[in-house]
Amino acid sequence: MIRESHEITTVTLPGIVHQTLAGPRDGLKAMEMWSQTIAPGAETPMHRHACEEIIFVIAGQGECEIEGVLRTFNEGATLIVPPDVVHRIANTGPSEMRLVAALSAAPVRVHAPDGARIPLPWDA
Image (tube, rainbow, N blue to C red; front, side):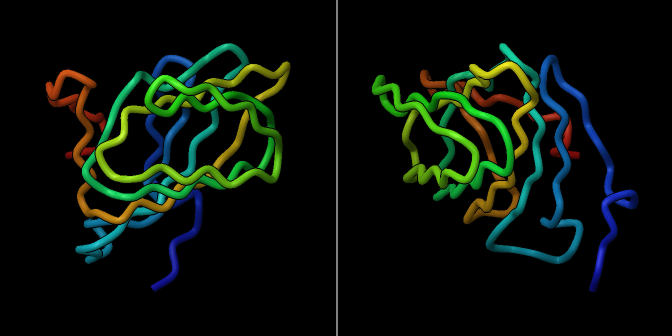
């Protein structure tokens, strides 16, 4: 199966443009792949999910907070997030950040640090 980018639904959140490149709609049961663009100054909420996540930064720079520890990164960085670890990604640069992420669950269920479920607009 091949999906072209223009065939994939784009979801816009404040400061974030998201596409689920592959996931349950494609018959995947054990992983998802996401593409996101994060505007300058925007960030993901603090969150966690019960799966591993690998993020490759195609363009931009920012910081990743994992369990209270801030690390900066630049274009070309790979961010590795273990399961159930509270984290966020922020764009601290002057231009859009573009990234792709592979997650070891399908569907991915996201929770706030306190355990409350965060519904995602692309869950449907």
